[in-house]
Each structure stands twice: as C-alpha cells, then as structure tokens.
Image (cartoon, rainbow, N blue to C red; front, side, top):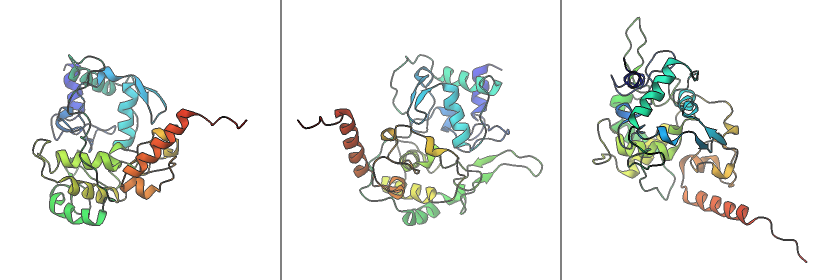
Length: 278
C-alpha cells in the first residue's frame, strides 16, 4: 500500500472520516472527509506550514508534534513515536494532500470558519433544546455517540461522543467555543456544508455551549499552555489569564470585551515602561 494511501486509512477514509487512535479504535473527532472538507478541519496545504512557532507550546512545533497534540487532546490518548509507521503514514498523507501548495500559500476553507459572534454569552440552556432537535439522533441524549463495535471487538464509533469519558478532553481545540460553534454551523447536522448550513449562527453558538458545558476528561498541565498569556485564545476555557476576565466569560463569551482588554495590554507592553519623571 502506498504510504499516502495508508495515511488516508489512518485518518479513516474508509468510514466516517475518523482516524485510528493508539489502541486501534477509530478517532471520534477527525477532520471530515479524510481531511479534505472545507471548514471541516481540513489537512490540505498544511505540510508546508511546519515547522512553525506555536503559541500554545511557546516554541517551534514540528508536524509530528502537531499530530501528537491531536492524539493527546482531541483523542485524549497517547502520543505516537515520531518514527512509528502510523506517524510516518499520517505525515505522508498530509504531504500528499499538500501537493502543489507552496509554503505559506493560504487556501480557502481552512480551519472551521468564521461566523459572526454573539453580543451575549452563549446559552447552554437554549442549546440543550436545540441539541435534542438537531443532534440527538446521531450523538445520543447522553452525548455518547453510536458505537460500531461487535460483542467481541471494539471498533470505535460510527458517530462520535461529544462528552463523557470517550470524548475529547478539555485541552482540545474543540473544547473552545469559537472552534466548536463554527464547526457545528458549517458541518452539522452530518452531511451539510458551508454552502448550505442548516443551523443558524445563533443556534450553533448555543448548541456548542451546551455540549461544552458537559463533563469530559481533564488534561493535566493546562496551566503551562500559552507561556505568553497575551497570545492565549479568548475562548480558552481554562486559566490562567492576563486580561482579568472570568473563566466563565472565556468559556461562553461575549468575547469582544476580552479582545479589547488584550489589545490594550499588548499596546502597553509594546510601548514599554513610562520614563521616570525628571
């Protein structure tokens, strides 16, 4: 099997687009359509972006380190050795998807999108009712997803759990409201895309708030993320913070006041200390 093809298999191109985790089960929080769907956390064009500075790490990050961040956060699993065949296949697949993309070239459809934000906190209570209508058929009333396992074999999930022990942990990118809400708006319910979304922005914000209000695994050492706190995303749901706003507001918004405070702190830092009076 060609290594690029094997990488697609590791990312679950044979199923729901769910990569294999370190125990052989499919990942539950994969880039959609094997990493090729616009605003579905695509992987195309990423190879030439690494290594690069990563604010969460506070240092340069390799593509292997970035993939292992997915393993330990989004999958709540263990890191792969850099030389492991699975890691090499994943890197080769991303390189294949990046064929013809020049380093630094910006492609449309990266990330999860950028819809308008609310001028109020996202509301988990509103989101609960919306979740019951739009999400429960695939993800269950308890957020546990739908397993594809046989009685004697664990084959992971057909539909991913959104909270609980098998979900992404609180250090994952999907545990941040802006990421989760945009992903929902442009990709959910399953089968929609950014050209024809079914959830309104307001609905997506509130459903994401409900999902993120539920219990999930805790990742140790999150206080060491983002050594420069002024580079910490406004929706990081865990402290410490440099801006004086509560964890609650960082988790649910509104985010405009936080951005304004961070911009002021950055400006003050750039200008340096005031000269002493004469």
